[in-house]
Image: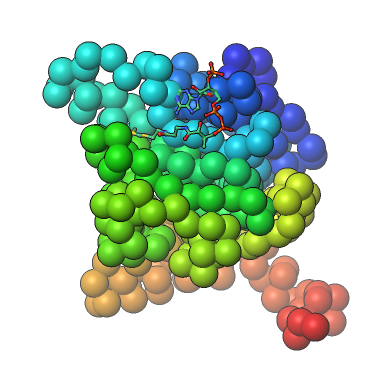
Length: 258
Ligand code: 1HE
């Protein structure tokens, strides 16, 4: 696949997608957002999980400020809805996406990261929502996704005050769920994606499409939906095979760490 602002490599079942405008700190131009949409709309055959990372010293500097033109209110809405469409393709797409974060993960960069299913941070990552200081508001889904990751109060603080979270703080507040040394993120992302790609397809489908929706429901409807999804998943031959493998001592036990 040939893109101008992205670079794609396939490693078996894993697709490694790199934001590739390091000179502009991977700022999200309209063209780059459009390329992301094309990529996630029609994944290359055989890709079962994607690792998303950034070229150079930062994951992503957010919206390409050089393109902030004289948009009317209506054009601003349309622009934001375009980002929403693209990031929905990532969140509710066909495969799990692991984002590997390093350096600046700011503004639209944090919005993009929050559309992924798993976040691995390197120790040099930092997070901010400079929209608050630039006199604008988030438009790439942060109100929904970042607020759910770290809470409304923390997100509002980031925007009110320009607060920057370190990688350690990002790990403690729930932005990332893995924290690794600088330079080790991609290998960790590929390791995790490989493990995820080996799951039963029904499990990955449920985690991408059902879990976030169930979490939005009230208890009654949520529990019913969980039962429906559980019933479907366990009826799959793949699930039967995996359970038999365990009972016949062919599958790994859950091991205590350390
Ligand atoms: C850019 C951008 C950008 C860098 N748009 N060109 N995002 C921001 O407010 C973050 C703005 N960027 C920064 O704070 C810093 O650039 C970084 C902390 C990310 C990186 O710093 P550094 O020292 O490594 O790089 P630099 O020297 O600041 O920038 C290198 C080049 O990238 C420079 O261009 P050059 O032609 O002078 O070399 C910068 O102008 C360019 N560059 N960031 C355009 N963002 C749907 S709503 C989403 C709303 C938002 O995302 S708002 C947040 C925007």
